[in-house]
Length: 336
Image (cartoon, rainbow, N blue to C red; front, side):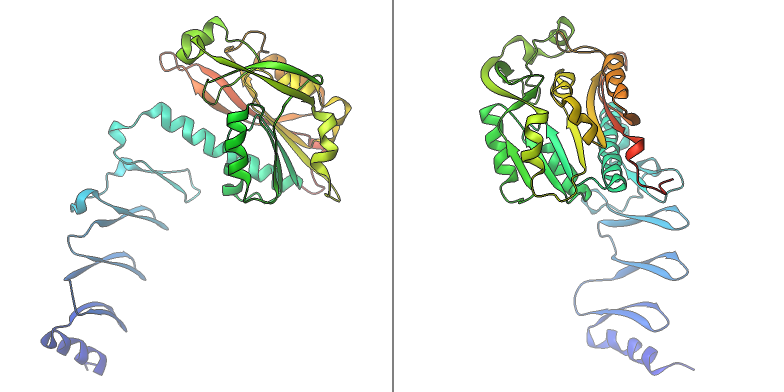
């Protein structure tokens, strides 16, 4: 026997109302537009869309679907190769027009994302409440941490005046993000820094390999900057934290070991660290990856993640890695 609900649905089109029946007890009514179409996702889930509209549903596995806008609203199926399941996690990677994507750029972007996610997880696991962001540039690293969910203190260091002004602007509405206009190194001094290299300003001159790879190295301006020791700025940076648990991130274009040396005995205060280590030297006098990692391991840090930053397009060789390291003895009790 037909219910009163069903009878009403059958009458509505006669008075200019569009009805889309979704099943027992559910329907969509509209005075304008239509007709609509219903896509069955599973026994209990349906997706309603305007027929000929721009959205399509693609199944990934038994529990996961992707809703995407198709180009120009064309009624074309989403290419299967554009939806990449990430193992058995239920997460997927969406690649628009995969046949025309630069695979190397996708890999490096994925590595950057995974690095930030890994670092954020380590900060949470070890209870970090202050991140030292050395070589902050305009604040890209700090912004990524905030977006990933880190809410603790960030203390950023950037020496060049123009770039520091942009960093200060980025941090002005974040009360727990401090910024300092100085570089960090082995000793208190002043020095000339090479600038106008976009995000790659360095206290070191470029190597022959670096000049061959980056045309920007062939010409540069310099600026005199102040350099401080890390151990001499730590008390100021950690002031107000009842139980400081700091993490050190360094991205100083070949100068990370000099920054690290400036921590002196207080390097033992850090529960973790991150350094850009080089397989191929872009700067004269910069350490190799093996030299840098050995120095960090000698102070009690162990590698938890390695993520490629740049590659050679012609050979596939990694030029630099983001190396994430933690002090296992600082891990909380009971951590598996």
